[in-house]
Length: 149
Image 1 (cartoon, rainbow, N blue to C red):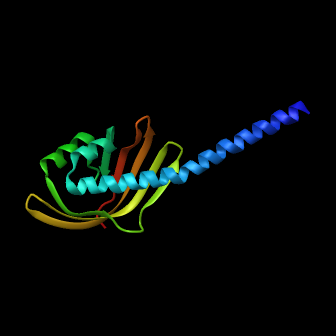
Image 2 (image 1 turned 120 degrees about the horizontal axis):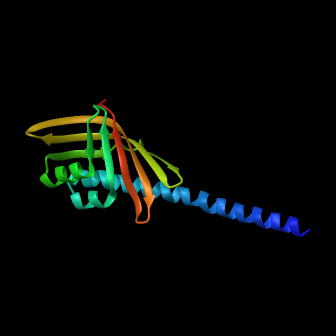
Image 3 (image 1 turned 120 degrees about the vertical axis):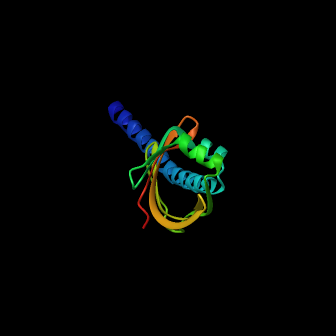
């Protein structure tokens, strides 16, 4: 009888922990979804301070062309205002956030309209942004963007 009670207690504890973890996932999805929208808005405004807060020190962005950029590259571009964005927005209804423990992946269709070096361009592309949970909250660690559609 004691063994059965211990087994029951262990099973009950496992169910409680699983319930807490499952309950946390929708909150994590919402948190990361909002953080990614906040990041896109910071890029649009060339807000290097907000970008720096969200980007992990080890961050890397890889474009469909194969070119890659570090956190320092993106912060320097924002600070110098190398690109002036009119549009830098996720298209409504395209964002999906998948959470796998302490890792979250955001995919969405991004619309862009910007001016760089006197030339204006507009394009749409798909991206995947990877976030990890750290002791200081969710951090954006890796991004990948498709070729323009």
